[in-house]
Image (cartoon, rainbow, N blue to C red; front, side):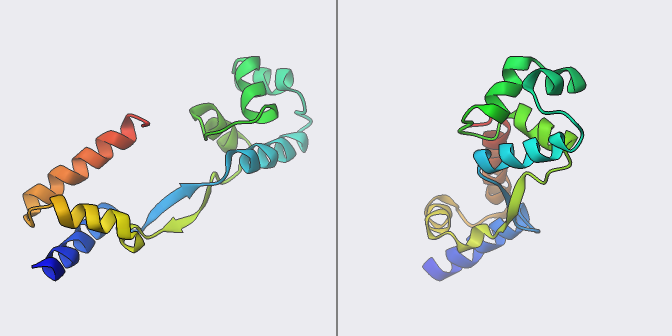
Length: 129
């Protein structure tokens, strides 16, 4: 039964992440990349960047010139404006033993339960937790 649950767990992951899952780059690396790209457009200060993209100067400063610990919505928006890819690559969730064990433990094996678990994970993502 354990191996069947493992196979079904992998199928759940494939259902949820058919193309894999992208992971954000380190926020300090992103901030540096964005600063370089924006400097090419003569946007070098938090004030000039804030004016150019209609953002708060303090938000820009915290995300680009401070020490951001997470990739915030503001940093993501700045990445888009600077044409910087915020992601470092694709991660295959089926390669995580922790995730696969958790799914194998709680999933009842049905397609409807798989969809409910997937919805819970998506709700968690939307809540930015």
